[in-house]
Image 1 (tube, one colour):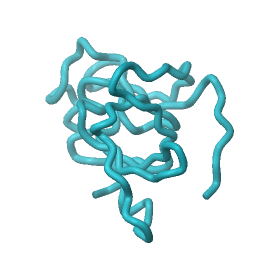
Image 2 (cartoon, one colour; image 1 turned 60 degrees about the vertical axis):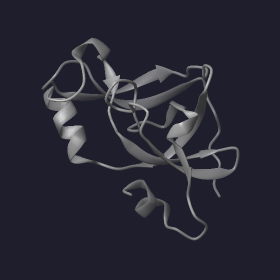
Image 3 (tube, rainbow, N blue to C red; image 1 turned 180 degrees about the horizontal axis):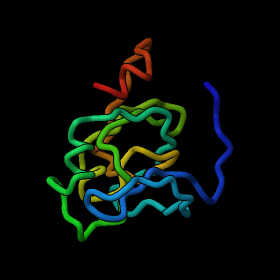
Image 4 (cartoon, rainbow, N blue to C red; image 1 turned 90 degrees about the vertical axis):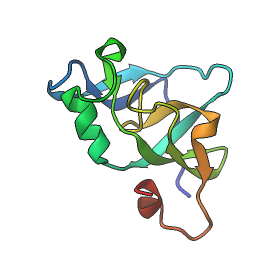
Length: 122
């Protein structure tokens, strides 16, 4: 496993307004709150839901700007997890980033031997 050096900033794909262009932004890492964990993301899926979110058909403009991405794979404490659910990409920052603070219940361990890219699309 290749570990990345943690910095105080990370890059993310952001949406500022429904139907607007996406941009890559550098953000400051946030600390997890109660029931949350910080995950180093490796892969993110591109789900049809992400397109609906970008168009403004799903989610609320009140939560913009926001990092898109409703699913992905990330590492926490040496274990790989599928990251999905808990409002990711819809109501809160999602997986199209190098780092994400996510609800602990949004993590499902990746079975040993499963390709991480395939797991990100599950």
